[in-house]
Image (tube, rainbow, N blue to C red; front, side, top):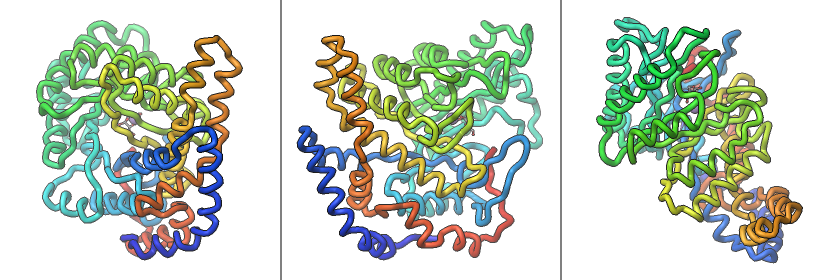
Length: 427
Ligand code: PSV
Ligand code: MN
């Protein structure tokens, strides 16, 4: 299904009167505080986040999975769904593919189709955490870290193939997430596992085209519960440093132990020029993969505050990170959930852009803790919904995407087109 410009325009027309009043008020308030609202709005309008090809259907837990009607049954339909998200939000113009969940068999056809849907290709993701049918050796005891050189070779080869697919699609990066680790003390030699991983990553790195990046994701636990070979940002950073200029760390918000100060990790990685990518989601306990901003919106704002500071003080030439949502949808319509996540990301970004950096530095230099905190609260408490609506209008999208999704009855149209029985690939 496709959403037309006329549909968007007519939905927006109905909101214009109220929006003009709200945006003018917001503009007045912000400009009184010395903020250039046009600039802020345009920054938000330029912000895009990739959608993972595996997040368009129902997510499951190990206890069960509840089907959605109209789930995309192949990569073409997944790209169409992202086209719908992009038409509605104006900020979801790229897909991130997971291989082999989504193998782009006919690349020319995929490229043509993606082009028609207005979608490009973001980071490629490899999968050495599941054995594939007919696989000669197993990843049961790890992949890039494995004690058996044959398994390591298989996993390296898979990553090289993922890069090759990505090259054909115009992607520019590979994200490596490893489930490698151990469940019991004594199972794994920590040092050897890390050395093997570094060596395997080096072979993959050597296969990267010169204009590509490699992102190394870390995770403290799950699916292994005693140790993970890359459990934290320090290990990921160490590996990225050893590999070279094209390797970076990737921060997945759900990959931290409870109460970890993620904004501080972001600040450190940006300072060293090694923040390459971001997976957005939210969590209460672990890697819960909930809607972005649904549990800890203040933390998300603080993270964006560090990102904005990092963009403005970029002595290490940190590249613009590859932004992606990495969430799972167990009880919500996946497309609505993704629209909510995009909204939360843009909200946090807009608020971070409103932070009075001069006042903050001044307060910090005087150790005025209350003043510093008040600067942050001032921005966090500002209602930025009119800025987001204006940004969406400027990029030709729906000013209120979830409402538009419902008014246009997208889910039922998808069910009519695809039926209720298809299951999207992914976890
Ligand atoms: C692992 O939990 C992870 O965050 C990695 O990014 C995987 O590629 C993705 O989730 C799989 O759902
Ligand atoms: Mn992730």
